[in-house]
Image 1 (cartoon, rainbow, N blue to C red):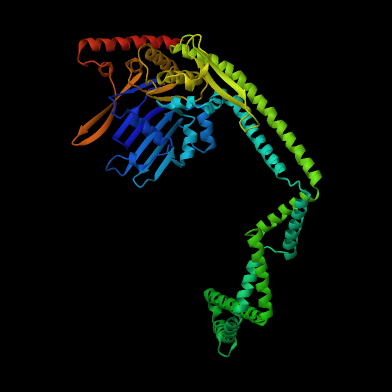
Image 2: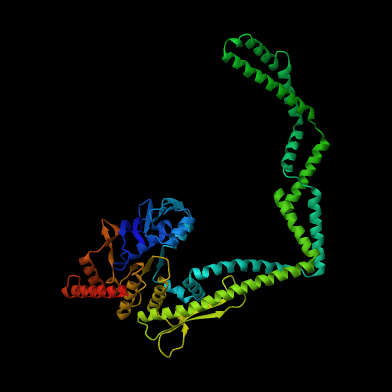
Length: 563
């Protein structure tokens, strides 16, 4: 559950620290007070895209930090896979956005990417905005909703199906690309043979290019190199040169080295230098003897390098890439030279892969068909709970043409809100207020199967009132029996159901506008409910009405949570 939200320098919030309850948390406030600013801060920490405009004026950064406790197994599994330590049964997700536009996201003090943060938090929290029901109008999303209802039962099959479909797609694409024209195939065989001959005749050797470059540099500078080496050898070998002077030093030390071990050590070191100098001199003379300024050799090396460059330009930037290309065209040559056999084998493989995809697709379709019957029954019941009497809800699953990575099904949510009316697509029948309740009905069904422990609803009560609002309040209270619910609302029927009630206020102090969020006491809750109900907060009648609706809501909530 989301235990704490800490926000600093976000939009109009200077600093806020909110401790949340594990059941139903309600946030209310005047229109424009900044209730959705808090939701924006939560989304910031969750890794949503944002820009530096959300940083409070004159601040260098903004910070949003979410603390989750009582972690479930699904969250712990994902965290473990990502190497995140959760030994304290706690996950702290924080994001700091700098005025430069750069942001840093941390989970339990470990810096992570936005995508990694979303991967973890997707197991922790779901957010439903007031326009979230728009996705219900998009039939392309309906199949995804059914699969989500199935959960792990279907995910394994879908993963295998995607893998098999990728294999099938690759085989089919290769089969479709085979050249069936004998004349064209003959030209392709000539081209492949020519390229193979060109590469193989070159007899490329790993590391050859660098060695040839070095040899060419030596040949091009042979005169300068010979002069330097000759001078060096002369300085070592001439009378009173390096060698003679070191020999004299060795002789001098030889007369005194017996007196201390340290002097003996000096003698050993200089003797080593003498031997090393002799060896280096011998090696330089040998190198000098091997230096040539042959124009013919230089030309041969240049021609060889030109050949290597030409092959690299045509077939790959490295020796390994050229070798890989050679293997590929050899395989292509085999395919073309023995076309009939290869095509027959590829056709068989494609048909076998197609059969595997079809088998998995049918298995997946069967699960979806079965799930849809159970799901539509549960959603009908949830709709009834929300005041949709005699409503029919149906999930229509039809076959789509061809094979696809996500199966062979199309799905559409159909509904009839009144007796005698035919089933129609959601997009053609429901108003905004009705869609809010339909979405809540679907969410409530999912809540019983979800591993996610926290739901946030941002004014999904838009467009409803009266008895419908009370029904929505009851449904939210029911969901919050086993899940944490955080709800931003403007309806007293919903606000009165709160286990914990927060008020969002916007204040102006010395021309600075700030948003404050504070937890309400019992008296504060009564005053806030009075305000929401549209009366004078100090009037006795409205305060009594507010107290009555709170008492009634608490009584209904207890009954709901006993079931």
